[in-house]
Image 1: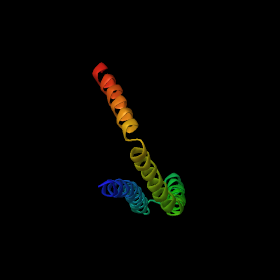
Image 2: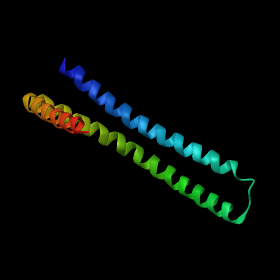
Image 3: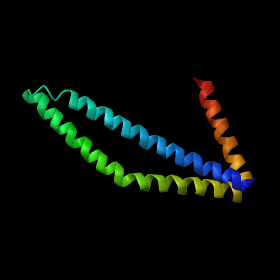
Image 4: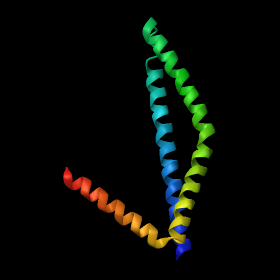
Length: 111
């Protein structure tokens, strides 16, 4: 049963990081489409802004592709660490979760 929980946590972390990366890629694609839609306006200031935005998008794409694997691996490591801690110290994990729940409840109640 613990193996199933562990697998679920790893899958959730991987899905969350993949969703974030997918959302960022979609944002970059939309921005690129918007920039290309203004290509017919060759006026000075707009042309300079468009050129700078395209350069920024290209740099972001390169950075994202190089960091994509790293982010996914870090998400896996964090999920594994949390899962390992909970399995080694189940009562401490329950206590921490209860304490955080209490604090959050108190903060929400004050609003």
